[in-house]
Image (cartoon, rainbow, N blue to C red; front, side):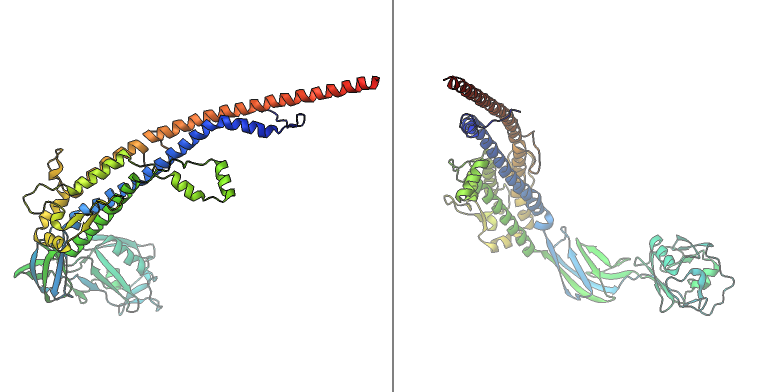
Length: 513
């Protein structure tokens, strides 16, 4: 490190002189830093567009192309609306289904007799099994808490200890079997209910809950052997357009329609038709997101470039603030137009417009957006709405959905035969491919849109290489600056020595006179 000496001997401001001299040397590096900042701004703007394209492709387009959104059916129930509910799937067949309920499917149940505390205490879920017995039954010697037991419910094994509480037994039954148990402490009873409906529980009597291999203590303590408080499960029986159907579940599927019966009797009519409102809303959402992306791309491609506005240095920013200039406005203009006429975005914009404008090769009358009441905004110079899609005739759109739903669906999602001719490819499918091409090109240009460090993309390498070059130049500038101070220090030292010698001589010769 060079020791800096002020201009005490010469009377000059050495720091100011050196900095003025260095400003000449720094000028080229300042331009390089401005270029680096411009590249970084451009990279971030392209990444922002990249994120918008990715979001449009992966969310809007992907969801829009799903048949559940463009071929959505609805099931309208009339009559016994509380007895029957229905949902239409994507493969539902339009038409009418008449449902007449004969009986509802039920689960098997079993309720134990009343249980009491053997010691006369208050019965609760925390009472141990070794401390209970059935009301009116006097058990013999109670098992110890460490004694074990096992039994089966519908063939499913339960193992435990008599030291368990009633709640522990209930929890084990609920966890290990297909039966749900509930202990009602106020009544001293355990209620068992099969988790499934219908006559399919298994065991000797499939319609009932079956307890097997239960020892005498548990039989008489829990009274789960009793058949006085049990009910059999029953299957659901319905007539569908006059045809009787029997099954264990209360949910049926017919012609792609899933309907559930909730009452033990009743009738309902299910009308299956296109959910036109939902499909129109999907189309409107697609158009809104398409237009937003189109405007973003068009805006960047036509954004004005202000060549006299450039990235500011730290000193320039400080000066701007001191003079009260609008720093934000300057930076806004300096960043404007960096993507003007960008080749990747220009190609994407053209592809998007062509994809929605090119007619689909089909034998149906639905071969274009215009055929379903959707047109493009008329061109106006400088307008960001150029190419925007608009629903000019919603009634025409609704008629297309209802009259030929398959042709309507194909207009957007038809896959084509795989060749380069896209006339047999649906509009949304074309756009999906357009987005993929642009994303691949942008990734090669700027890397991942969320990457912190990128040295593989074209722009990433330029930024990295330029940054390293600037670092090397800054090292050279530091050496030049140090050398200048070294020279001025030598000059100050020489002047100081000369002044000392001169004073000495003056003193010597002056004294002699």
